[in-house]
Length: 294
Image (tube, rainbow, N blue to C red):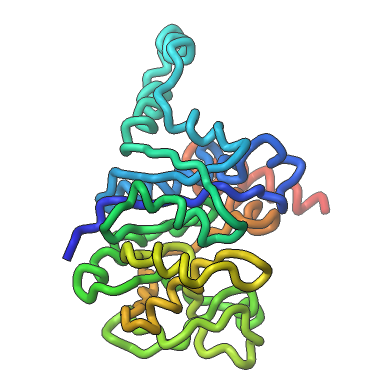
């Protein structure tokens, strides 16, 4: 079985939920204290042993490329002059983390399009897909847990997250599952945004995928579907019908952070800010004082 050596991050969306902020700035570059969202995703990939990262971009996404590029000479000199060695080390590390390849998205609207756009770079090998506007902090990293399952069972692998509140089940694709072992399940089907009383489980399957190269032809066969969009799940369902097994890994020792809408983004930023060594304690004091005033 071929090793996973490449990961693809779709980052070509318009970010309409965050307008006007995202008119000129990618939603993937929204800050979580002192790092953009997409850096958390990249760090997960790198910590999982992959250093070839394809980022599929669109118009107004140049800031992503600039972020992962080498720092400008002016910035470096400014930090040297200011004797800010720790900050210099941090920004140098960003460009050295991985080999970054950028592909411009082409094709119909839909979350299958950026995956299909990466075909010339992925070529004939299995690969990982992680969305650029959400992440899981876990130990070991989510993707590493998924890679271990893929190396043992093959097929396709999707990360699974337990949804604690029943009313939230209608927000996700919920899996009908069959236990394989431990935290590994075989997916019988995925029910998109079910009525909470009719959900087949409390496991949402989304966020990260390990897919075979056959997904590209499957997406072409599936074509545009609901809403005239090209859906990744349609390609996955087609491969499953053709006999490719589909597994879910319920991620252990981790927490899911959604930054795809305003409220969840603010929750994520606040929680990680409270845990930040530089600002956490003072922020706690400020929030307590603010609550007392109200």
